[in-house]
Amino acid sequence: MAKAKTGSFWLTETVDVAVGASRATSTLDLGAYVDVGDQQAISVEEIEYIVQREDGGVYDSNINGILPVGGSLTFQVSDLNPANLVLEADDVTLIGQGQLHVGIYYDGAADANNNVWSHSTSFHPDVFGKLDETRMVVNDNMYCLVDVSGNVIGQDLAVTFRLKCKIVKLSTKDWMAIAIQSTASDN
Image: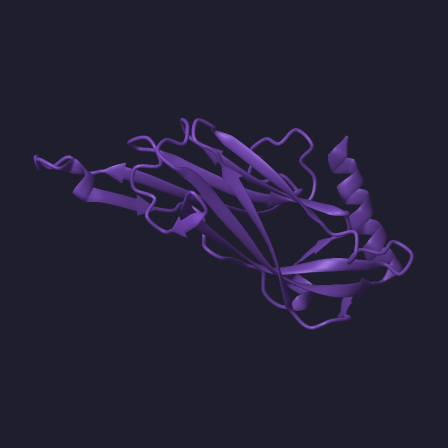
């Protein structure tokens, strides 16, 4: 199906969600990597999501107090998403998705903020496997989205998307199949 033209490399994109916002997006430009004439595509091998608090240009991992009580984050990467919506899990344009839920245990303690818990319902990171099992992208862009239940409070929130990729050459048949699937999803 695909033949690697490069070794693995990392693409990164950070989506900043400002105080008071509930959704933010960013576009990862792949124009330098995807080439229709050469049937060249991007193979996504792995995606990592890093959630941080941002306060005046200083980043840390203390997200306590950024989300409303019982808040959650959804972050996703897709190769088509012009409406910037959270996609259904079986959407063919969805490349990877993660969720983080943050809540507070109320156990009678005077300071409930000392009892913060979190868990995820999606796997972190998304790992796709060998080259023939990876996610092939033939579009010029990938879209990174962060959706917050409620609004961000306190300080800004930053989610960094780290994508482990390779540039690959596809057979003409495979290139066409992926391009047709992608185009059909756009309609």
